[in-house]
Every structure is written in structure tokens, then in C-alpha cells.
Amino acid sequence: MDSNEIRSVNHSNALVLGLIGMIAVHVMDLPGKLEEVPYLGVMYIIVILLAGFLVHRMISGATKRDYIAAAALAAAVIVGFVINRTVGMPGATDDIGNWSEPLGLLSLVIESWVVYIALSATRATNLASDASTALRAKVSVTSS
Image (tube, rainbow, N blue to C red; front, side, top):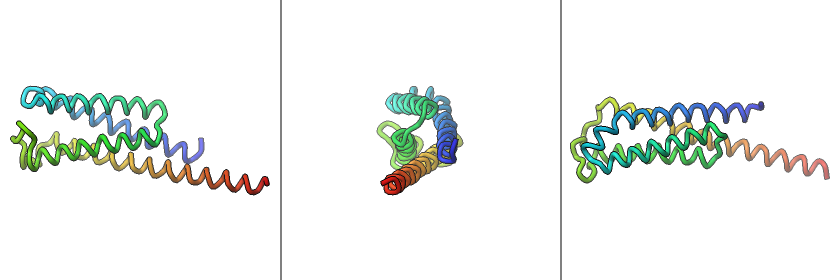
């Protein structure tokens, strides 16, 4: 296994942990959301399902597209959290200004981690692809 493959496995493993963390946080908060604001509960279920799908993708051999999808999912959750804490959402204004709620803070930390690792993985994938292309070009010129 070369260093690029090891780096890819490490990124995938780190993302699996982050995505499982996202699932856990949203599962813990789901019953309350379904009672208070059902459409937010449905959004939580969508996040849980998408994160679970991405865990499967990471375990099965992640691609650059999977890394981008993980970053986008986590970033969307962060945006939703910020909207919920600043201006609120329809039928859900109780959390405006509630920045210190522990589960919400944990969620922000985990999702920020997922965005960071996913973007790092995407960058590493680009660098590995560029290096591979350069090597193929060099071999092609040398063998001509």
C-alpha cells in the first residue's frame, strides 16, 4: 500500500467516525424534534439516512464525489443550525440565541470536523491524481 492509499484509508476512517457522530447526535435529538416541529424531525431523518449511506460509501471505497457529498451534508447541517439559532425556522423560534446547548455544540464540532476532513480528502485526491497524470506523461515521453 503506497502513501496515497494509506492517506485515503485514513481520510475514509476519519469520515466514518464523523458521520457516525452526526448520526448519533441527530438520533438523540430526534424524538424531541418530531414532537416539537415535525418537519425538522423529518429533516433529521434525512440527515441520518444520508450520513448512513455515506458511511457505507466510505467503507466500500470512497471516491472524490463521496468526500464532496460528506462535506456538503455536514455544511448544510451547520447552515441549518446557524439559521435556527439566529432567525429561527418556521414554527421553531425557541432556539434563537441558544448557542450553548451541549448537543448543538457537539453537533457543530462534529460537522466542522467532517467538512475539514472531507475537504482535505478531496484535496489529497486531487494531488494524487495530478501526480499520477504527471507520472504517466513522463513515462509516455520517456518511452517514445
